[in-house]
Length: 175
Image (cartoon, rainbow, N blue to C red):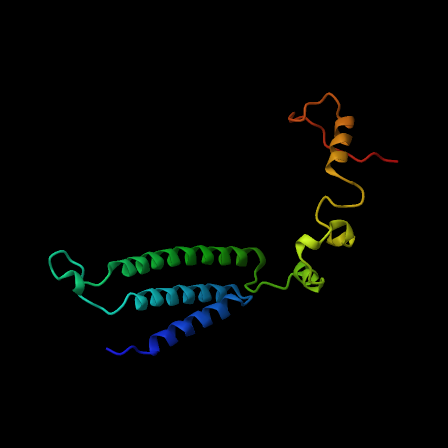
């Protein structure tokens, strides 16, 4: 039996279409891309299992004539998992539609701001060198370190246990 090129081409086409759809901003297309990726993986597992042979029933055929049941079991499990994840994604898309009445995810301003930054590794970044709006939380100019904050809270609430629920909220003093 000669191998055919059709099945690998179909699998490659399904993977390509699935990845293309996953990268779209439309949530429905993302779900369709996920489904295509699942089907392409199932076809890949079945095609990698080899030629179809006799059923692996005890006493029915010799060991050399039986097909391997493991790829079939993996594909059956993958079908169930893909169905469950697809149902979960559909529920998320439905909830998103209920909240914002929109199926397409808009461009995030935070993504744009990050994309315009210079290419730099996170290890090379010093939060003090970044502009104020790009600094991580807790790295503002007013509070210098966590130790200073702890000392200020200890002075302000001396004698009040820190695990007390009745700890009063911190308020800025008016000047």
